[in-house]
Amino acid sequence: MKIMKFTERLIEWYKHYKRDLPWRNTTNPYYIWLSEIILQQTRVNQGLSYYYKFTQNFPTIYILASADIDFVLKNWQGLGYYSRARNMHFTSQEVVNKYNGKFPAEYHELLKLKGIGPYTAAAISSFAFGLPFAVVDGNVIRVLSRVFGIDIAYDTTSGKNHFNAFAQELILNTNPAIYNQAIMDFGSIQCKFKNPECVICPMRDFCVAFKKGLVKDLPYKSKRINKKITYLHYFIVSNQNSVWMQKRTEKLWRGLYDFPFLEFAEKYSIKYIQNTKEWQDLFFGFDINIKSISKTIVHHLTHKKIYAKFWYIDSNDFIKKDYVTIHKNRLINLPVSRLIEKSLNINIH
Image (tube, rainbow, N blue to C red; front, side):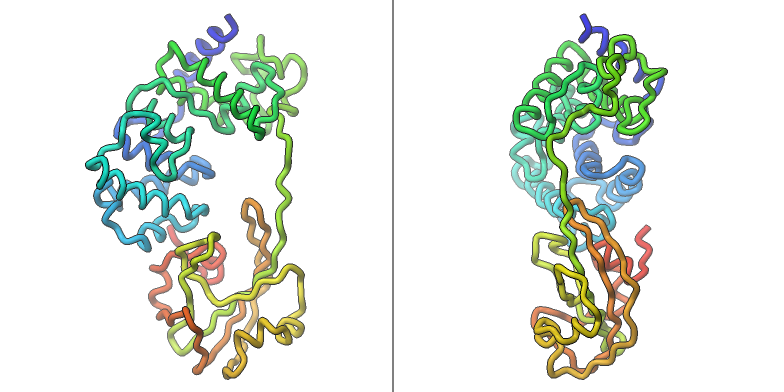
């Protein structure tokens, strides 16, 4: 009875308060897939402009599949988690080559595509094909945890299985697309992480968290992320109108262009850094002129907190294997991390 009351009130709430979002006005799986990949780890208000950018620059999956990866990464610049863009490009090619440009309509077939997990597969299945697969994200977990008083840690295997199974039970006998959109909006607008609108909530008469004063305690998480602190010193080495850069191959920011840099686990003085072996390995034998050093820029990643300084250096004889010279006029067209963008003062929008 409570489940039926919950779904009925949820759908009724959605009729009055649903968000008008462009990807909800289509059943085209390509556009739905684009929106879901963009919105992974991204707020809707930020992802909206990127959705318009991608649908304008890559209006079909064939155009995305044939695009140069640097152009895809440049369009993605600023969203972070760049593996999403690389996976997006790879998957577009796979859909074109293996599925003749059409996304498979089967949930388990969608899961085989790179970058598509259970949430994205459920979203495409329900929004594009009307199949009853429940989306489970932070918003959904928060709503279910509070309304039904679920105190299982959602970041454990048993917790994930419980929420997935319960969400799947709720979506049966409803319109899958409307239900999924409704519960996501409800979590984003009504049952917010901070300052939820409990007083005017349609679930308040049977919400366990509201009745027991557990709104701030649910959902329950078992562990917290301790961010690693690192100190990066970037060297913008100029030779007249060009600078030295490298296309990264490491996991972090792979495929983006980067300046030579040194990384330390502790904060060191400028004088100390210039006497390290790492400095000697980078600059020994070259005639360099340090023009200026920036103030420290603090940059946050999910698992890391970066303190960065940028050294502006002139040198006519600096050369480094695996690095190339890039004309300064080309910098605005290269895909770079948000941190590097800050140093270049490039406005990407």
